[in-house]
Length: 202
Image (tube, rainbow, N blue to C red; front, side, top):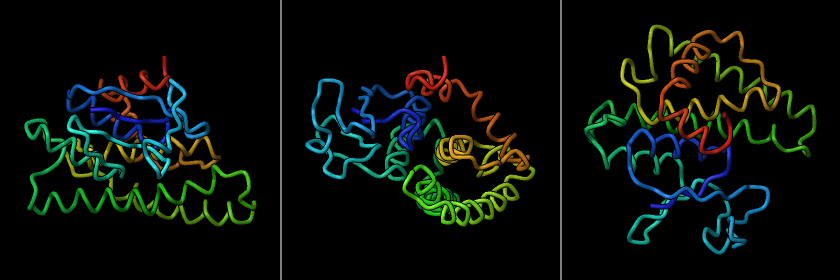
């Protein structure tokens, strides 16, 4: 498999999942600013949508949405318990979390990275984002991970997205449960391996 990624972007979630799964893969650095692979190839010729993550399977088939990619990865190694079994209530809870992180958190962080976003709009976005993050903080009370005591691919996604808070001036220091969660997830060997591979930590 090949994973096209940009350091620190949402593709970190898929990168983490691959390390958690222990699957063989090739990581292809594809910075979102240049849209070029290391050999100079125009990334749009590989993925016309132009964003990451983008997963190319060994048989040439592709996946290009993070929540689908991490579930695919998890399902290749069911013994690792990175996702509950398909058809179970717990699997739908995983999908619920992946959807919420993608639509309510991930997408609300995006305008904060855009220098063209007016300050007034940024302030409103941050206020809305903090409401959602405060709710997530409450949901993590008494839990090790989003689904309870077991780590899942949704945790890697939440860790990735909440990494962005410091970069865009969103103060989540008061969200104690998220802070504890981030420390727990950030200490996992697979998370450290993915972050080192992306040059985010030494």
